[in-house]
Length: 154
Image (cartoon, rainbow, N blue to C red; front, side, top):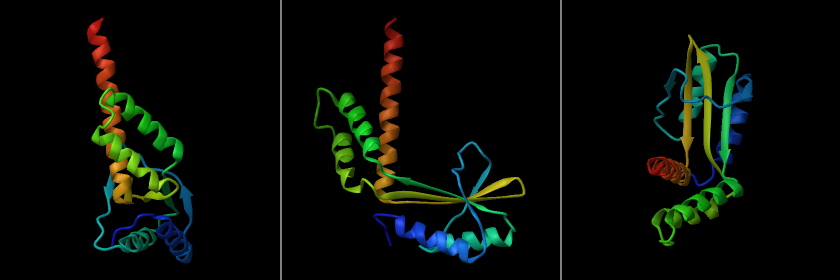
């Protein structure tokens, strides 16, 4: 089952974690930390993850969410528009503009806990958030190319 907004899932996570007598800490685990990514078998796989954290006697779980903010989408569209100039009908720009319907929605959730010097992670994202991330990476790549091209001219 694909979700368009993960806010209800987040609410379920908060209640489930509290129901297990565990604490949450707002925090995002970055990619440069040794991690093991939890592979889920179904939509409610995050519940198994929480139960593993409890079994490991983790003192708390980290929890992070990403909500698509209007200013983030506007910045992405601006970067893509600048890159697409003078070809204003670029596919990436159209995809970014199509994300407008998701502003204010939760697109990404991450849970984590530490055990034995390793961070265990559970991550889930909507399809539109994956598109947003791909477009952000593309815009960053284009910006890097522009900077590199400018250096080559000097």
